Figure 1 (cartoon, rainbow, N blue to C red):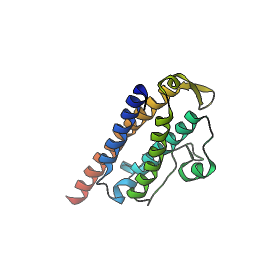
Figure 2 (cartoon, rainbow, N blue to C red):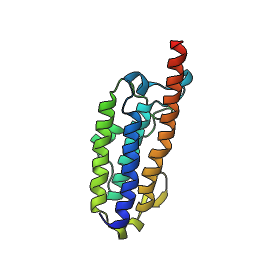
Figure 3 (cartoon, rainbow, N blue to C red):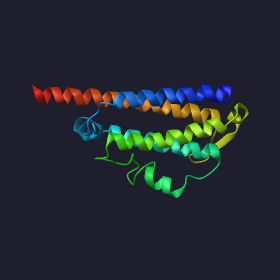
Length: 166
């Protein structure tokens, strides 16, 4: 990998590794837990969301649309209620295996990128543009952002478990 691409890749890799460590011991009940009053996104939903967003960025970097089979497997971005799609009962092993597939694609793209290409712009969302460098940084930042949500869900889950056990 080129030098700057490698540094950006390392930030994404570190955050992805940290995410896997955070969730490694979670039970099915915990990864499906949606917080107090079931009003938040579950860990499972957040991990699938991260995988889908990363997938979209990968194909933006490549200048290609997301293939239909991958769109169907990981998407959509939002459901008919404009929320992160609900998933439940999918094992942590499967969710992480699916995300590993996306991360492998990301790594492959990074090996193909040069530092000079980092300043190329790509379209995202409705009419917005970003450099590839910003997109890679966004992947890392977005992962950290949702790790905070997952950590909060874990805290609430443990607190509810203790209340029920008392």
